[in-house]
Length: 155
Image (cartoon, rainbow, N blue to C red; front, side, top):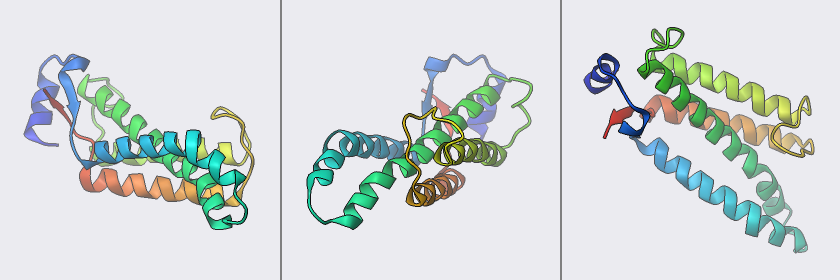
């Protein structure tokens, strides 16, 4: 934990005084942009085209990758906020443990959704490519978080 983050722990922190640093935020925004373009424009268009099986597979599975990334990123951010706000259950967790726990929670959600244990993320059709995309998204976000972190800092 950096000195700035330790100082945040010592003083009262308002949520609107915090900002996110690091490349993970930029990748998060890019993923959200791709997700909306894919869902609203590209996927309906590609489904109407003949052939292009690989592009159809990618366009159908990429939202699962993005869902895993965004979910773990958000869970990690919430856990880091809990740590900064000195909640007893989060106070002693290192950033690395927060990323591990967030990835496990995200994995449970996305994998059980793909296996049709629940439909909390919407109507789902089982596809093994979706499971692969979800696992790839989980691995990608875990590596991103461990290399760059989320890191909250005061504005």
